[in-house]
Image 1 (tube, rainbow, N blue to C red):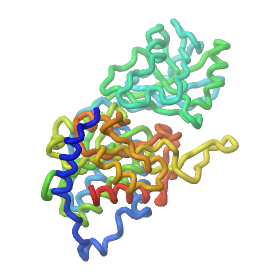
Image 2 (image 1 turned 135 degrees about the horizontal axis):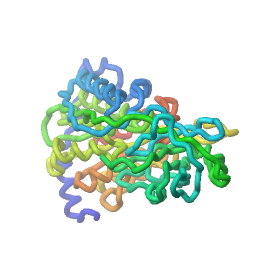
Image 3 (image 1 turned 180 degrees about the horizontal axis):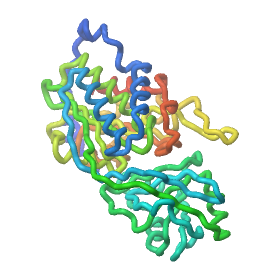
Length: 425
């Protein structure tokens, strides 16, 4: 629900009363390479992607924690880890064998493993005992945070099948991993995802009643995962800048672009400002933003004690991709589905800061509209004023989301837009 006019005016007055012009850069800061330059930002994307897969509680996630800690400490932040235990499934061999050919596959959380070597049975479009069910999920099904599992999956599992194969219809035919509710109990039978490009072959096999082998090997363990929090004490209420740090596969565009901008802003603020700053990178994003919820419930300042919250979400600076002659090809500019959400009193500033940037140049009023992703969490909790970036992408949640989905020329304008807002907000 939108704030009343007098509330917005009061907030604006409060901001005006406490806003100070950023001090001139010191000689040391002036001599430091610009942390928001495109080359610096892209170096961080490549570093993040190079740490491996970033699922919560995995070695890649742990390596990201260490890398972020070092970067923030080098910038002058006091850094702490916020740990929480999380059940982690370590996949081994995961595939679907059809007519002697192994098709790409991936578990749908929370997995239950097959016996070694998998299970073999006729593929069926209607499920049933002694069958492997085949279902076709529409694009985007099960992907958003706080979404229940698709009803088709639940019905197939409950039909008494040996396993379930779910085709993920992503825009470019890639296998698309699905988010899951946090700490959901394992499925009663193995459930695996398949790529849309293999959908026709799988449907033909199911129509003919041919057998397939589903193999989902792995083990479940409980491991610590960590939010990374940097503090830089200064006058006034803190500005909080948040971004998720975990995700499916290498997630260079989904997570890496936002993390690079998050680090760049943290370095810039430390070098040029005496402001009170909190930066947080949260784990557990693929499980309904588990780490972000944990932070807001425990260590985050209360909404009334927060000057501004900036939430940097998914795919914020990535090129669009399309199929050309059957091949995935990068397009000249960003995808259309990009959202800049801001509180009402920052609408004009947001439009000015992101002028000319596709999607972002028409801000969404967060006092009048719902927000996507983790931005919705902070909005619901009452953080105002609030700024957030989030975008869709055709390679979202796919193994193809690698460092070449972005570059310095794509990253820098987005970073400069947030820099401009932070200068004036």
